[in-house]
Image (tube, rainbow, N blue to C red; front, side):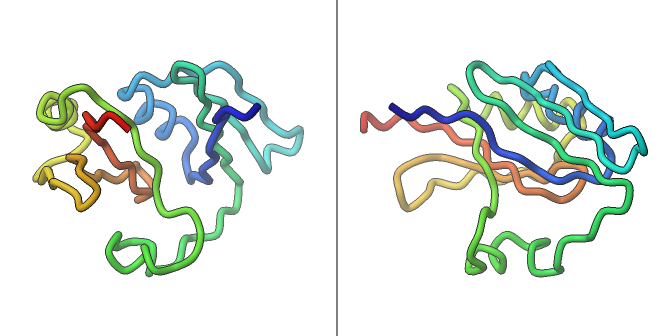
Length: 135
């Protein structure tokens, strides 16, 4: 009955964010801008799911608690989103080679997956996971 459709992010520069997420395979499929240019929306597609980006002319900065993952996980609400890869080490090397991250530390999680986090141009956390579990 249900399938995942999208997650939305508010960003400060839509062009920078489109470029950043294209490195993960997201393709821009729709762009919309209000007549007064106070809001721009982009839909990026990866397989059957969408990333919806909102960019307001006058954005409100995120609270400082959101800048450090460990502090922010206790705050109720969306904290990050994850992208699955076949090889966590290949993904790490790819992102470093693209200049999108450095000093990436792969962690073996309590739930049995290997993962690492990077931040997008606005400091939004993106988790990269290798999940080989059969669940």
